[in-house]
Length: 163
Image 1 (cartoon, rainbow, N blue to C red):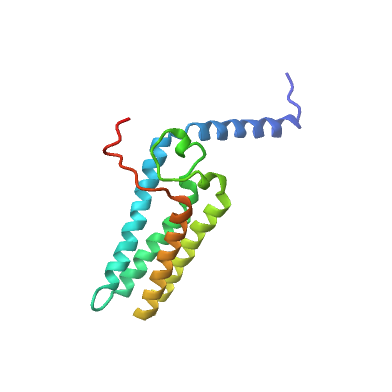
Image 2 (tube, rainbow, N blue to C red):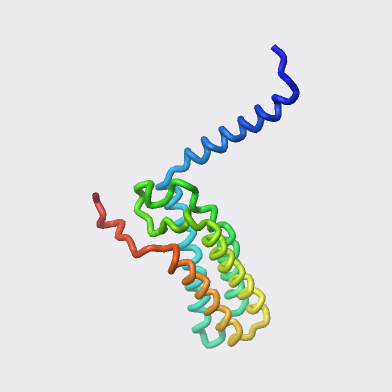
């Protein structure tokens, strides 16, 4: 049996496509939910540290910048935390609205806004200008809220939902 030279790239492409499709189909919605839930808690914790730090008599600008860096590092990953098939249709109790998947470009832009605002806070924190840091922290919170408004639903009581 001889393999035609032109057939090899097609066979490779088909093989990669099948593997990619199988990998996508193998995503466990519950595990995807738990992973993104953990990561969002890390973002929330970093933001809380920023806001708590700003309440200090002398805010630690370096610590605030470090927390902003944590948020930036996670923000660029956010769109990857929502693979197809891990939304409400999967049966997993999630606050993620279907718009995340139907408006993936808008969702990615919202994540990018969070990344941009957290990067700006890092830069401003280096100046030590507390008033400017406070203003940028507020802008960072606005980026969080912008995404929550459109792409996150109401609280879910996981502990008392035994259906």
